[in-house]
Image (cartoon, rainbow, N blue to C red; front, top):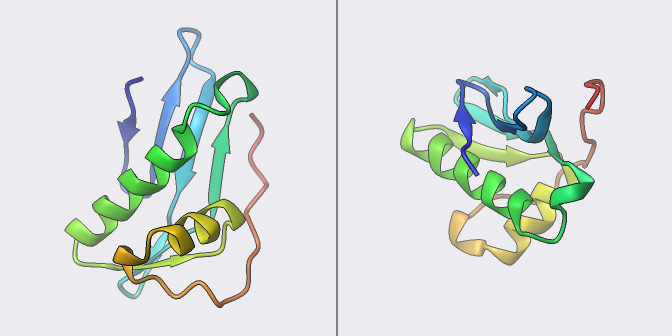
Length: 100
């Protein structure tokens, strides 16, 4: 799967251009907050969401920013990956305003 990387999101589309996987991470004051992870049901169970969060985390750190997470999937992922040293005790609230 080919992922497309933008300044505040990483995503993949199907051949028709429909978004089939996405993670978003707006940045403010040097902190990038992973606030949304989406994977199309046809891809679930293939580790795509984990790949997206890892790609986002690595991008955020490579840009010198800190990582925060409000998306419940990302919070759970960081709890399983303590090497990223992300505080996962804050409030959890995914952004759900996009349509897929």
